[in-house]
Image 1: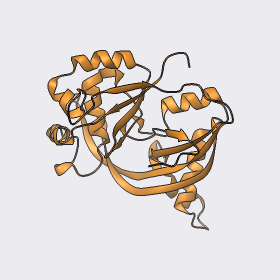
Image 2: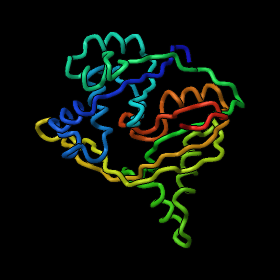
Image 3: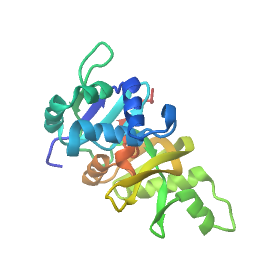
Image 4: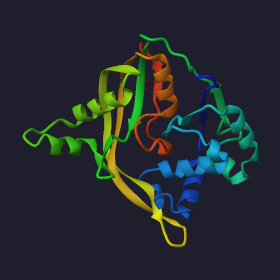
Length: 244
């Protein structure tokens, strides 16, 4: 990859962001349910077309994202409205270090071992719709009941393709979550928003890089669908380092 690549960190102010998102109908009352659309909209409000993705929000650690547009992000950050800057924690304060940007590896050695954590939406396309990969396997293997974790692990391995081999894959969290998505455009040009229920799984494991360029591209792109809404960010550490 020829251009620079960066890891972005910010600490959103949820007491500001949730009311803003609720006023726009981006989350359910009292902030229950998926926050992916709210973060997506807030990042778009702050950075426009440069909004970083994929991203991962972890309540105790803030929001992490990847971007190849660090200089543009800093310029957009300076132009963000006070409300948007406050709710995303873009300015340094006693409660937030502000927008943090650091260079992230974009060159990986074939054979390199890395520990990973990843939140994904394990779905497949069927009849132009998304279907839970587990339910698809149940339909396909009607004479046997597959294990959900095994089905999702196989799905995950396919997402990596030739980029890396996965080892010690464990599903550490699973739920069916409602995520807000826009429907088809209406006559007046507006696109209604509606909740869609689907699988929401978090995996940890160890991987070995097989193809350096393909792996770098996969990290930058993200894994699976809904990468602009909080899924698919591949969080990496040295393989010998345990997750905190």
